[in-house]
Image (cartoon, rainbow, N blue to C red; front, side, top):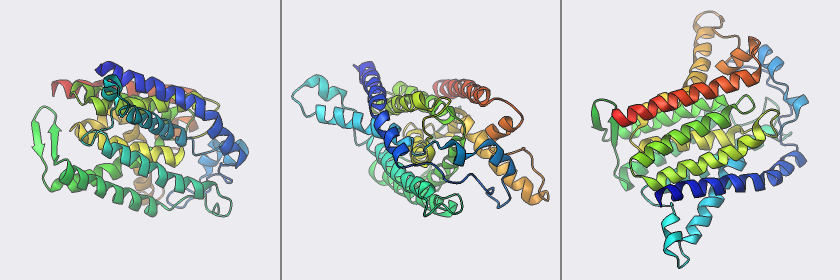
Length: 348
């Protein structure tokens, strides 16, 4: 029954995603939900000459907000099984994976993150707001993530009474009140990994691998509801990936990356395996880290850059690698590091 509880919702989510994709796609194209201007400046205010060559949003006209497909298909599936639990059927009741101690918080994070990201995407594509590349400022986005992180930390501490973190090869550490600080920092850091959404098929494949890995960890811990939730996300991601492989029908953008990165943090803390998150999510780490290194280098080395362009996947693209080569090698690395993280969780 546990295997069925995981695989059945995953498959249903994938099918639902395929069915609703045309509706979402038609809406996005009808309302021209793409950036009206290409990236003009980098994060530190300089002219983004390399980025302008690699990305021409104005000519490509590929809509953003594709992340809607991921979280909407997942939420429809969760709703179906939740309603099914109220039908007089022991089997359907057992298949429901919405539970207070395992899936309420990640579902809340997924919804809130998705809606906040959707607002940012709206400002990115609405012509009347698209003056400087559109979207909310970095400060506003980080403030939103910070507030959501505080709510999550409070729920862990007060409602779930969970403040323990597994230190690989050492044991369990009860963080106490430090849990609040650590949770917020991890969520802010993981959110920065959302910059991986830059090449067709890249973010969908990488997030599928990461959530699949944590789903396996949760299953091994007998957190079946949480495992089912993780794989439902995978089902939605695979449906998105079906339409995001080159040439992409739409991009994930903030409504996808914000919801997924923040939900990932909640899942990692629920399994108490947050310290292996940098390993399992290594592709996010190197993408985010390369951007930070680039900014610091330009600031303290008189404008000198370490990479042709950041994040790292765009650096390889600027070197002349085909985008598909970059994406598939990221997938390979993602799988290997996911396996490594799972191994550490099992023996550590």
